[in-house]
Amino acid sequence: MVIQEDFEQYAVKAKSLPANQTNENLLILYGLYKQSTVGPVNTDRPGIFNMRDRAKWDAWKAVEGKSKDEAMCDYVTKVKQLLEEAGLPA
Image (cartoon, rainbow, N blue to C red; front, side, top):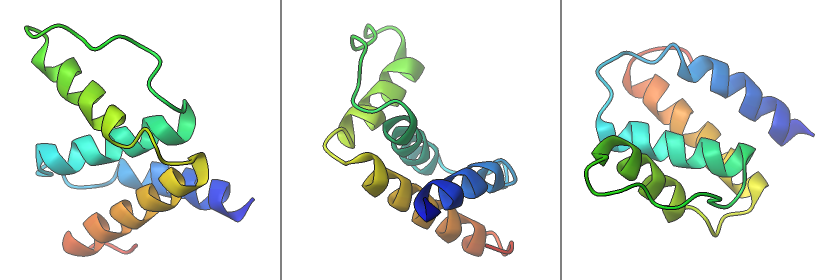
């Protein structure tokens, strides 16, 4: 399971990303991570007054059609991209 190993490795590396990441990038990572680890959305959409959790739910819902392996590959690719943009080793 090379994909699983890469995913776990880059999930750890994602924690070393600089704190100045855009919300868009963070939400993309969140959605891909949840799709990789949990699968399709399994909760109701948060209410309109809970904007943070609603945005996270929407990011997860946006990638709901991806398979676990596809979501893992996309997650690894996105973390690599963000590490390279930050000038950190990928």
